[in-house]
Every structure is written in C-alpha cells, then in structure tokens.
Image (cartoon, rainbow, N blue to C red; front, side):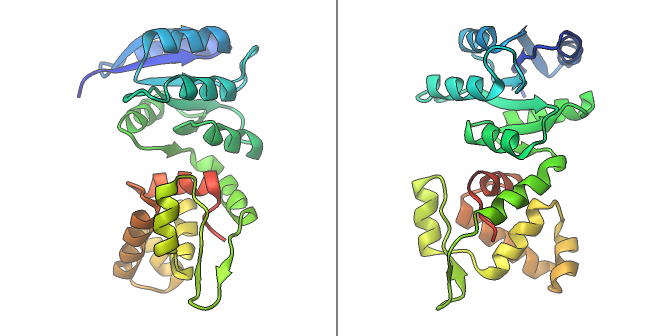
Length: 236
C-alpha cells in the first residue's frame, strides 16, 4: 500500500506535537503538515490535498465541524476527496451528531493510544468509517429518538435514509423487526455469537440478518451501518 498522506489540525501545542511525532514515525504515512486553528487548517488541507485530515472539534477560530463542512463543500466534485477523522475529547451527543452530519468519516476520542490511532487512520483511508466505542450509546439514543413509522400490515418499518438510492431500496425492501433488533446490537458492538445468544437464534441466522441489513443499507461493513444509524436514526 502506498503511503497515506495525512494532515493535522489541532490547537493544543503538546497534543499537536505528540500526534505529529507519532504520524511522522510511521513508515506507512506521509505527514504533509499541521495547523493550530481552523482557518489555517482548512487552507493547509485544500493546498496539500492529503488523503486524510485529522481535525479537532474545539478549534479557536473555526471549529472542526465548520472546517469539515467547508472542506466537503470545496471538494464536492473531487473524485478523491480528503477523508476526515474527528479527534476530540468531546463525547457529547451534539458534538458527535454534528460531526457526522458535517460529513466526517470517522470519530475518535483523544484518549486513544497512538497505535490505535494509526489503525483508525488506515481504516478510514481505506474507505471505511470508524466510530469510537465510547459513543455507541449516543448512536442508540439518537436512533431511538428518530423512531420511524411501523407498518402493521406486514410487520416491517419504513426508514428515512440520507441518500436517495438507499431510500429507494428501503422502500422496496424495508428492514424487518428482527433486522432492526440485530442492527441495534451491531451498533452496541456485539459480535454474531453474542447477538445469537441475546436473541436466541443461531449464528447462521444472525449472519443472514447481517447480510440483509448491509445490502438494504448499501453498507460495506458493520461500522458503516452504524454510521448510517447515527446520521439518520435507523433503529427504533
């Protein structure tokens, strides 16, 4: 795999230096630069066009949410836009939801160790979304608040999704109640064996439900399905 080009936007000097040092020591990454605030950080990203930008939410002039929004808008027509990893101490519901609504690809808490951070960088670069386990509860809370209409005739639910193609698929093939139960447990981080025990179904049946969920949500993996749940509220 070619080197991943990474930029860093972080206002805290010690944190910025520590992350920069860790990134520069990795043979798999190319560190293109860092910035101490949102305005200079956005300029850095647009000028260098890294594969991934690590952006703090609590920036002094333009917060990380606005940086992400402006970046995504500026690269809207780009075939290879910069992916955004939000790195922060904030695990509040508003911060998490705002980050993903702005277009962030992954969300990570600052108490993560450097080895784990490098792994998250690689996962995000490869096109997958990563959500810190610490915010799984926020995913569930938002999902429950966005409970969708249930269709009693066929015991299925209709889901409002952010992309037209996902909406069309879900209208034709809505998630069943059982699939919603499995999705909620996926969001909580349970594996197939644990879901099997909780729902009193076989592992094979769980795998079938998971496959159906990913297909209906147009998600490549379980993490992307959880991100979609966070953004739109897919579990009742």
